[in-house]
Length: 158
Image (cartoon, rainbow, N blue to C red; front, side, top):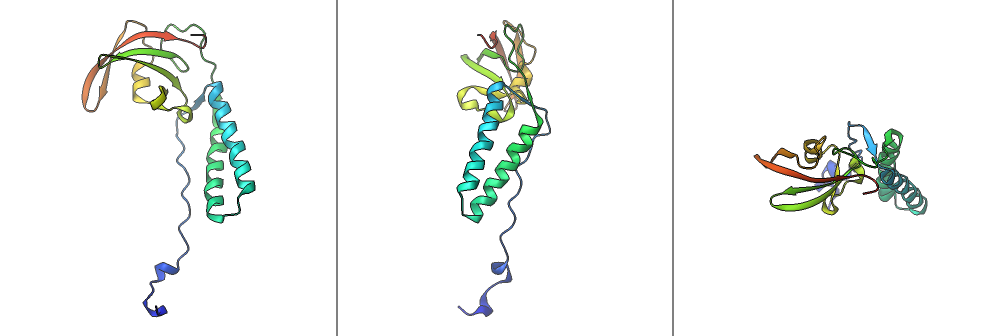
């Protein structure tokens, strides 16, 4: 193809990789969450050292900047031993939609709802904050109100 038929955009360098968004909320983490952040940084350091691909390096360095920022702002919160109410670090069993669900309230980066860990900043965790076993919490989800029954609250030893 003749050079006359290419667009200037085709010759432009690729756009820079955008930084990962960092939450403006406090970076509360459990001791396990702190270990996860440190492991992520160690893994990325090794990957950067071993990589020769400039595109991959840019992405790896972006990820490392994210984890360094999260590490710098992390506040390690020890889970309570014998909590009375739902709070950061507690394990809570709820009845929602007729089904019992076990949740662990953790930091944003360690949350994985598929395995029952939810971020303390999530709407569900916020709705449950301060609830005791036997309490019914009103929770808006999908544009409708639903009632959630708190069945139990346990701490680190629970």
